[in-house]
Length: 140
Image (cartoon, rainbow, N blue to C red; front, side, top):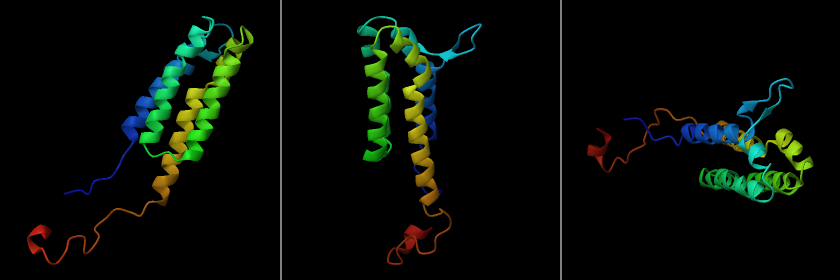
């Protein structure tokens, strides 16, 4: 039987898909710049930028669930706050949203943290003495 290894690959892939749809799902013809639903929602004054906070909050919640430390969550919160505050400014904010891509930045921060944690983890292999010798039937 294989030992259980906490893998966040599927969760990270799901968050990455969400971030891509919000930040860079579409390529603008002529200029070739990528934008997503965040930029499109931002065209609707006040309501659009507020609605774009929902996926950002979900990414933060999932990052916390996946074990991101407070320092990483704080950086994510700053990215989200900058996106919301500057994105709320008419026209300038809409252009800013296209370049800032806070949700992709936040997923990148989470991925970097998870890779660092995986590199620090001890290797999982055949570890002698995993089961107690007092319970020989458990070793079968």
